[in-house]
Length: 502
Image (cartoon, rainbow, N blue to C red; front, side, top):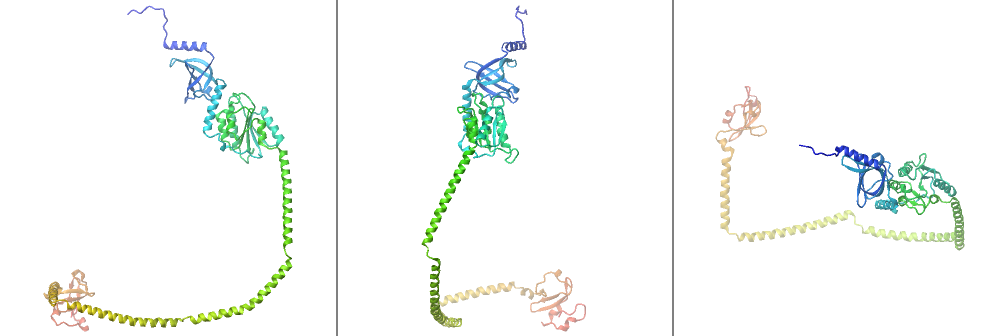
């Protein structure tokens, strides 16, 4: 197959990609791109990927990890920014992008929009609630100041404190604008709170966060979220003194008090010493006069009451005379009183019945009751006998005879049955009932031991016996033929090893 004739050069994909990359980087070595941030992606590697867009176009942007750490603001979706960097391409996806070096908000309007959104977010969390704000100490033992050590702010604060009421001041020097300023201010607030109340240096009782005036961009560090949250978490009351009276930052909303200027913050921190001394003197003067008037009033009142009182000696004489009269009346009245009580006691004693008399009365009552009970029982028995006689008279003699005859026949049958089941019938046939000394029946030869006393029960009588050996009793049949008689004491020692069974 013949190849077509052409004079166009042939390139590989990589060659074309490198050529495009070199062209873009050569012609757009440094650019500033203005647009709205879209879809920011903070990758796990530490890089930031996002897009910049306007009404008709979109361009990708990337900010490497080292550069991202130096950015003055956090890139968020919807922010209008100006990104400074260089144009390059990414051969892996055949697209061009901006390698960002710096990012700044596009104008004051964008800053105000971001500030308002952040204010609403923090307010929704309750960080600006008035209930969270604390009262400032009347006269703090020491004051902590967070500001630049070289500016006029610290000099104004120190000068104003010296004029009003000198207090120890701890300065935590920080950068108040530029890169890292917000982090330094937040770290200073946390550092003051980390000090111990009795440490060296001692933790201050009041904080002043101050900065001079400036543009919105200059004051932006005090709008950062890290600073606002540090002030909200502070255990020490905070006065914010940022800029001039017309300047407003987010730290003003979260601080316990807002001062229009750093000098006004110093005035809020301490009272005027001369005014305090004058006030104390005035209070002491008023207290002295009040005490003097109260004492004079009480003195006049006591003197007036004293004039209305009678002479103490006369009061005592009158009471003594009255006591004498009562003593005399008591002596006269006591005789009649005790006499009446004695008569009353005698009458009560006469009415008392002794236990012996009470027992005799109860015994008499019981005897009378027994007589009545006997008569009542006799009457009841007579009535029951009459009732029984009337009931017996109505019964038919024939029925009684039949009932007696039936019961007699039943009794005879039971007697015959009992006689047939009696063991004595068995003894009549020649059997013997063997019992031990405790009258318990012996039913097995194994239960008999040598020398054991036994009782042999026959049909007509019982004969005692002694077992000759285990399992066999001494012959007792011969003794059964003799007349029934009790054995004699001297017959128990008969001849032979067994002895007499009778």
